[in-house]
Image: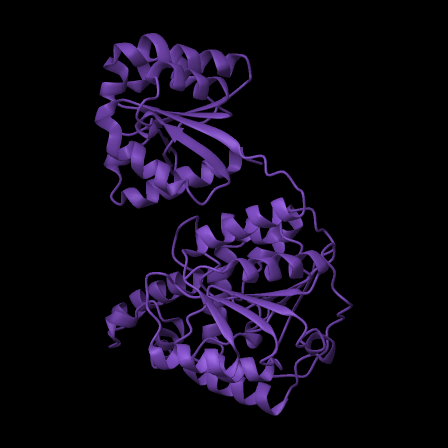
Length: 430
């Protein structure tokens, strides 16, 4: 389900006048571009520990962190402080990881972000977006403390980690028992959420929920504690690939007047970003990317094009030529305006007369003239090192540890190669 025109207008107006509060669920923070949510990856790694310790668990829920952590607590010798220690180790390992979704959210004029993941990726994304006065605070359900919270603004937004932050392990909500205690403490105001924070929630605000699993029982009590009213304008993203149970949808629609959005989350946020830019009169200048590939590398070409979709790029390849278009003329036009050129290198690429004599020289000339960034991507093992011009490129992908140009087809999991490629391309957009 997409938003209706009236809903889009209300959301864009709320962003424009600073009355939109964004609430981020655990699916927004990921370990890599297009990778698992951090909580799911953390649970997966812990489940490996359970297997080593021969602790039984339901493998169908290996990505459910609170469940896996609860099972982790049954290991002999594990103490109450161990979950927090494990979490601190995990999130420190992924510190600084920011994905394109967080970057696009950070570009919007949002004053208050409620983050339910214990990382600070959105904080770093906001600062990268030039919002250096971003304030970061979090709730600790074990003790009463009131961080310094001033009236947040789009230039000095507040990010509040509702379920704690990994730098203070005691504050984290990790197990199912923690969830019960957390909800009980919040509902009883023991300790209370900061009054200055709660005053931000009123019926005149628009609330945008992104990346939540609405089947989680604790969310219902949590929403009530935030003083959300039926008169509020509440828009909630729901996973497009998982249908909500009718009773769940009925509860949120009747209790809080939710309007659910079921588009792909990356597509929705990208559309929101573009619509707001147009609404505010800001021109969105997307980089233009051209993929040069031999027809026999079509599957690699299409997979890369698909993986690049979340990035703010105008990506094109010859497979997108429409009926009636002149192939050579269209390709030349795309080449002349390309900011980034990807060369999908294989034995067929190197053996193609058309590529070797026409397309490759054009790309290399644009690189020499500093008009385009050119990135060779090795799709299948070949003697690409014999082509001197390729070896002189600043970046040759994919890379794995110290191996440069490790062909995509030789990776145990090609998805890891594609994610790595997307991260490198994203770095070229800065």
